[in-house]
Length: 104
Image (cartoon, rainbow, N blue to C red):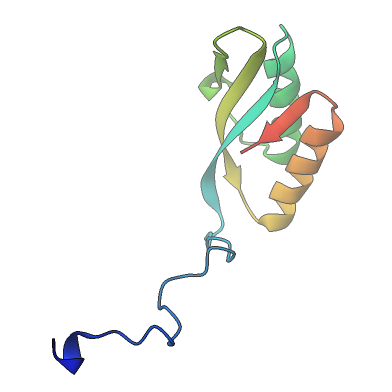
């Protein structure tokens, strides 16, 4: 094996660090999945919160998926994100409802 085929493991890898967040260019269409306990009005609550943060949000694009045992629901949607502050405020308000377990 020649020296040209060897890689120096002491050098930093050129791949992105797993701790660095992905770069998002705003504004953009931003897909979100909101998971909470199954209830008839869960999707409506999520829709109301999202509509306050994105006035152009189209609720007809909302998709509700129940878990296998129908204990949880995930609401999948795409909103127009304008910046990190908007997304943080949205996530905070969704969590503040007390009905949301996870936002992905």
